[in-house]
Image (cartoon, rainbow over all chains, first blue to last red):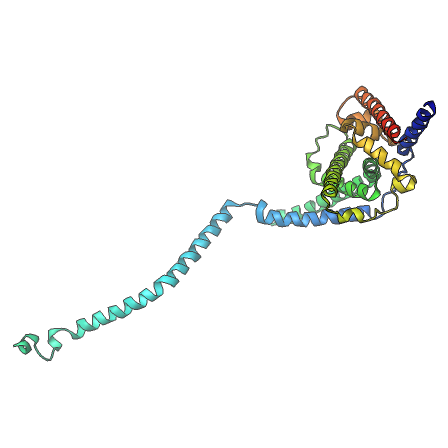
Length: 116
Length: 195
């Protein structure tokens, strides 16, 4: 019984001694180079993020909005107004022709006379 | 335009001197940081990875450093908290893989042999003993573990440990004493059960 306690104590001591015997590490010679590389890649990623999300400029955003509205209205105009305008031009042309040539001065015969 | 031309080289100078300052800072503290992390994680590669994370954090938040403590203390505090986070992650991973083992799903990572250089498990010949020690350390509360492990490393005085833990020297002494007692009783219990 006593012997096993002694044995256990010895084991405990040996186990705790691991911490005292731990070797002191020499830092890898490329440690700093790797670190700087890592920081550089993080920096470039951050610059990208700031350019697209971080640097919010209300004036720039408003200008962008105006530009989008302009483009959208121009597109609406060209997509929907163009066929209508062709129709209206042709109908206007027909109207003016009928006014020009449909007058009594240019009629060859009187409609009322023909009816008679 | 003229002012821009004047400011640019100044900015450049500030960036270059900032980079030089950081590089000097790394050179000065890298060994202490790597060895501090190594005390906690018992593995060279993990320790170096953690040390890199520590310095990235330092680089990112050096502006927030308020000089309430020494710069070195602040850096070592980051090293300790990163190491404790790593241990917590490892613990969760271990629990998850044992759960998977119970369910019957094998984790391919388990079958990959660990790299065998500079790990205390190999250097100290008795892997089992290291595992027992790690388990006993894992069971300690974070502040006891930190105070005890830092006290075992050359270069940390009790005052410095107190600064890192943001407590007093008597509190650190008490933490170390309690950690030793807890470790002793845990290890005794373990070997009693084994023998």
